Length: 228
Ligand SMILES: [Ca+2]
Image (cartoon, rainbow, N blue to C red):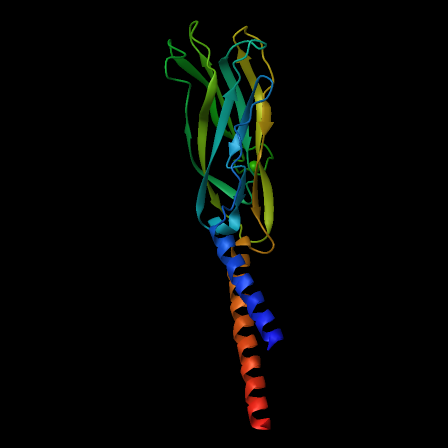
């Protein structure tokens, strides 16, 4: 009996662990990247292709955080970057691009580059080149903003991964000089064992253990009753 009670306590603990895992957030909240002069990054930084599913789309953003400190020229007048994906795993469906607004770059801006490129030479686009410069002598941009949103389609269903790569092609600051931003790529992954199945399988295994444990206990009870 004591052994059965211990087993029951174990099963309850497993069930409680299931509840805790279901309630826990799946990803930690990360702080906005900074960098010496600023940063450019992909958000979210991790995309699980299994969760998206073959033939479905997901959206990632390219964001910047331009520092405004006394040790650096305040803000940017122009920017240029490449965003690159693996064209055998993903297909770009659409993109939305932005320029700094909200009281900066008052004289408008000129889009220098907004083109899709085939950088690896397989005739399929794998890179977006985006560059914008302010006109006149405007207020330089500092702070956080989204430069572009990319909608990508999952075109390969097996285990695979690739970087969603950012290449800094030049951020021109208030003194007309180019300073490097900290860059942070995103990662796209179809895991070998889909993470989506881990939790349901754990729940099923726990329930199966409870049922089997109960049956074994009943068999022993019946056995001792017959023996009497
Ligand atoms: Ca290509």
